[in-house]
Image (cartoon, rainbow over all chains, first blue to last red):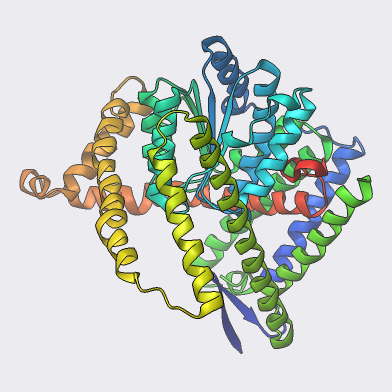
Length: 268
Length: 216
């Protein structure tokens, strides 16, 4: 017996007696937990490969300090429940702190109102950490519009008007991605972008200096912090990827041979 | 504020709700799913309060701009006037039951300003794509050359003139899009999904707190 339930765009196949998605979730939890445990205990010492886009953040901020121009940062269209926005906010905290330390004006824009309370708190805290709470300007954290192209126009105008030295586009983006990147290009800004949306990545790759592709954006927070527990979770993530690759290879061969039990078990 | 209040309690609430919502996705139980649907509506309510916060912040910024007469203030004045109109309309409706009689103005603003504005900005993309493509499609390295070749083939495969030049462009385009492109896109999507699971686990366990502001 099979029932189909719709959760957003994804349809999960839930079978009575065997729930492949639930088992995969539990296995993922266990593997990531194991990765964290082994890293924290020092059994394994994983090293995250270099992410040039994240390493270039300091270069961006330094350039802005030299030029005396602001840094613009946007998390795009997503709300606070979007994983790309959460990842973008993690990086925003670091960028805001570095901007505060170097006396660079930090302009932050977002589209979804749910981002605002978190963003204000986070950036304020970053200025406190840098020891410059008096330089925090709430008016530089801007909700421009929740309409896609009105927001795009607002960002484009801001970047060109303020002549941003760095344009950081890290979050959830849709059709307006190229508008942001072209505005940054025209303002002469150094640009770093990152998204998991495969349709927008080509636009960023062609227009920005550095692009964080897909998981690089989401793991950037852990990369910056270098905290063993966070690095350990990335180790677990790599194990899951390895298992996924093996399952895909084995599944493809078995499926080609006519044995479909594995794909049925996984609910595919 | 103590560490328990500002860090531990939010993480406990977050972890409990996260596991509850994960259960909703993975389990089929009408009662459970109904409770989860109620929890989702709470998210919408909280989101509405966030809108009010954002509107307040934006108003404060624009009022301050008008007070200081910084830059161009026309847009600030217009924005405050429009919000005052909305607030006045809501007040009249809430306390005197008067329905808005200027609905056509709102409709006109949308039809006459907002929709054409959206269409204009969207159409700008065509020029931006041309400009970005010009910069990208230069054979400066092996990768850029492959990109250039693939781009030309796909372009000719989709344009009627390509069909007229050589009939092989269409099947080559189909292969590039359905095999090479799809394989690459799936790698990106799958790696993002796995990384997202790891991110959520870090958040649920309280290891990733950089997005929490004062929770750190």
